[in-house]
Image 1 (spheres, one colour):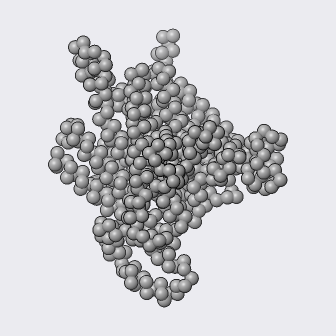
Image 2 (tube, helix red, strand yellow):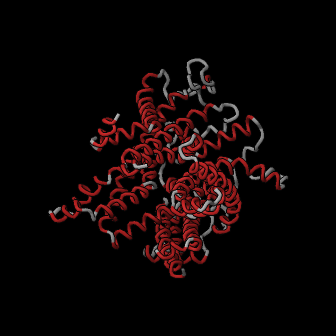
Image 3 (cartoon, rainbow over the protein chains, first blue to last red):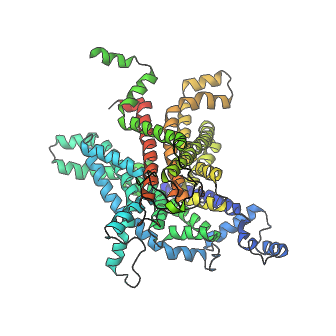
Length: 316
Length: 291
């Protein structure tokens, strides 16, 4: 087990190095490079620019600069926002809570609903329910999330007036019920794609399990059907879902960005778009690196957790 | 009855695949809808008396089916149907061209990684893994913000964020095909590595490549709609399905039709390509035929 974890950890660290190199390359792609903020200002002469370049060490060879930048990233020094001079990491962390709240709610909805649809579809394969669920999942995966958000706002906010059209809370209220009221629409919109994915994976995982020998054995022993399903089939069918959770993480993060934009949700995705609008490159790059690191850690944790609950993985 | 069953076994692979594909009704429907969308976008603007960029401020916010404008007009009095058709040209072209670029890059990277394996393969595939760590929309928006927006940039950037899945598929295929007799025979024949890769191995992996290409078009159309909706893709006055929705949110209360038509067009196109890809997967992969 320790060897498996060490192995997987080494892989993740190597990936992090490549990811950071890509991030560094993109940063230097910015018009004017890391100095774009100063280059755009009319008060800076070429002489000033040259001096700042030297002061910031931007005249050194790129590999040295990269090592320096990577070292500072590891130490938590991610630069400062052009907008208000605040440290990038603290800007990100102040918006992270809202995003995690949205993502967690959507995931809970998607896991419960998706697993239920998937299991039922697998048990009644090719039934009307299964066909509708399969076709519905494909359509759900094809709807642009932001457009589904617009339709939701139109129906439930504009027409019916049941749900607020955006924001995380009513100014001056902010009670638990008020927060919940604001959370429903964006969480459901974000959950749509996730539910479809979970349903599809759960269905195929369940189909694989219920044709296994040990299920037939359990049936032959005369075990009641509900016990076969819950204790034997479901438990094993749920195992690969751990990997799905890891794989789905980037999509979930991307979906959160879109849902936050439509519902003016004050999270990391919205911060990302605002920062792009202000050409606030340190924050843009910070969020890009932060989200990639989150994805990396997510898949690492999923793999380790899978190995903990399923001993067959560790050996291979 | 019996003879019909027997004759299935004697069908050429292509015919058998076509037969399996025909059974997949949703894939057929997808193909028909794609054809209609392509023809409508290509020929429709010639049949319509309105220009997609013609501004008629006196006729702004005309609802659908009121007078000459079938789908109504937008906030500047432009005909929504004309914009939908011109937008279709842009969105569908981006979908297909981005797919072609992504396939070229993905096939090249996958073929090299799968054929050479070892250090070359490991480095290339770790690069694929690393790019996949970035959530696609974040990466696409960051790149779009750093470059000048436009048709070419948007297409290239979408391709740049979509080639990795193809590379994975091709790498796995080439790695397993490389050990097969025909590949070893080609090697013994004295064929060059490049020739074996792209004349022997890649053509034999054509089935998963075609499926990946179809699904890739769906993904590219969806990505175009995201970046253009957020304002970093196709720039007005040119229309695309994504940027038509750009202003729709502001007028959601007063003119909801502005949001409905382009959204339905995107959903229809993406769903059709996804179903088509699904049908092709079933049709081209005989192993799926057993159950």
